[in-house]
Image (cartoon, rainbow, N blue to C red; front, side, top):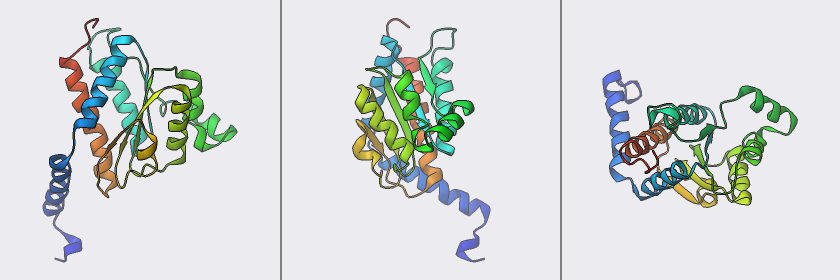
Amino acid sequence: MSENNKLPTAFFSDYASRLQGVLASADWSGVAQLAEDMRDCWANGRQVFFCGNGGSAGNAIHLANDYLYGIAKRTGGGMRVLSLAANAAVITCLANDVGYDSIYSEQLAVQGQKGDLLIVLSGSGNSPNILKALEQARAMGVRSCAILGYSGGKAKAMADLPIHFDVNDMQISEDLQVIVGHMIMQWLCENKPEAQ
């Protein structure tokens, strides 16, 4: 059997090893800062926005769910959180009327306020709609974080808080977005603000 036709178990073991390698070498200080920023938003009723494309859009929706309810497990106790990737009617309207590169920035311009937090999820860090959302956040005084793979792209320099995993693999990049989200979720469950 050639190297390109590994047995599934060998292929899966290799994938797990690559993911473990990134996790073992990661600098977690940016994640710690994001956790504090999210806790501050939760304590002060500020909004947290997530966005991404493709699998990252799915992750944005997943994580918004976790923070809306999962961190508190009681009605009204969660974080004010919204995935900008979740409303198909809004996304297709904006894509049609003003362009796909504006689907997130236009939503943020209406929904965001100074002191809120935007979290962009991107493998490449170069998607035009992600970059435009980061520009909009800066213009409004919305703090921004980017969870990135590959080289980090342009988003790495544009975000207030870049969390960059130097991995040239889209699936592992997307895995890491959810891992970071779940790490922070569990930390917040154990470190709720006083009002919660």
